[in-house]
Structures are given as C-alpha cells and as structure tokens.
Image (spheres, rainbow, N blue to C red):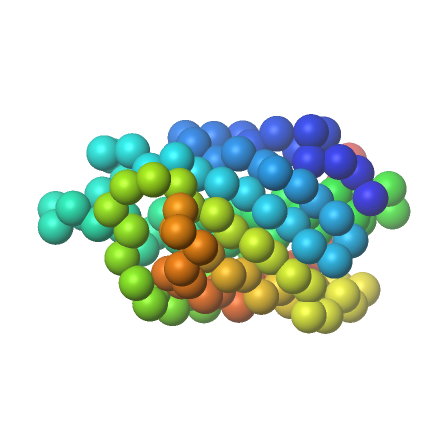
Length: 133
C-alpha cells in the first residue's frame, strides 16, 4: 500500500484544509482544522465539510491500496449522518474498510471533534476501475 505522503490532498480536499494522517490497510485517518469559512451562518461546521472529508479520505486510501495494480478509485456513494455540531478545533476522520471487492470498496468513517466525541458517521462506497492512460 502506498503511503499517505504519496497522495497529498489535492483539489477540493486541499481547499478545505484536509491533512492526511495515515493510510494503513485496515485504517485511514485525516484531519481538518476548523476555519471560519467551514461554518454555516449558525456558527457550526457545514455538513459538506464532513461528507467531503469522508469521501476524500476513503478515495485516497483506496487509491493508495490499488495503484500498484493500475487501478484508480473514486467516490460512488456517500451517506453521511450528522450527529453533533462542531464549532471550533480539529475534525478527525477515522475510516475502516468493510468490504474490499475487485470493483467496489465500502468504508465506515467515524468523524470526531477535538474532544473525541462522535459528530458524524459516513458509509462510503468507492468505485475501483482500471487506470486509463
């Protein structure tokens, strides 16, 4: 499996401040430091930040695992439930694969605040396809 350093956050993941912590075969981690531009008008982190963090992390972790087989991975379905608001501090996502098929991976993602409280849960489905050159 490739390391998290090989897959530095790019595009939207980079724009929202995503930082990879680790990509291991059974777990991937990432963080975002809450900024003012992450907040809704009510002062809490917008749900799209949680959903984007989950999708970016699981897509990158799957890519890290399949790249040596000339495969690529991308989000196919994102189901994120918001359980508790975050207003400041750090958002941490911990993703664990539930299924690793030839064409589809499924991940469960737990998103916690700086205090370790669960704030969102995501179930991510990632498509795995041959790399087209």
